[in-house]
Length: 289
Image (cartoon, rainbow, N blue to C red):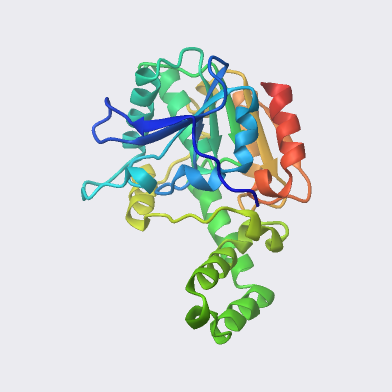
């Protein structure tokens, strides 16, 4: 995997309640994209370097959402989905992102949807003009439970369990702690992939558990398929979903129906299409953008 190049520029936000780290890639001036990473409680780095294909001809902005990465906080005030939506609204305003194309991956896809719903109801200051959703997180609590069950099943697969046992017995932790951590990370995310061997090509990341938990708790028994939610969003939308993603394809199908969105399903692909099927992913993306 090639190294992650340094950003064109970076800094911290000035208008959010707590400073949020941001970085920009690509030429300037150029069409602008704002990319939302997954999690919640993670950071943007694990989208790189592969997602920088978006920045070959565009000005692409990433930021670490509150509570994760370089936007960590010692505050024990729970981070909620409303917190994340408000932060996003302020980031958009601070950077003057008019006619915004919002790109969301995994949890970032659900955050983009929540933001668009709030925009349709006039509860935020801005409204995206287009949405690009890549393997978005489940759009209801019931679908999220299906994902959790399927991911747990995959992680308990005897082949993966054997690899974990072999790693524990290998002595690698004592010989090379960095190599041990890399291998342990790969096995911890294997269930997200159609081909678990491809986990080696995913930049390692960490999730702040309390942030992840507080955001999901704040959503309660959510169901965005209910009338007045997803169906209130009318902006042009592309949803891309790996057929072998542990997140049920039914979730993206339901979102596409309600939003009148285009849905592209990638074969031989799990939850990380920018690693497993980058050419197919970016062909769909370029056709939309």
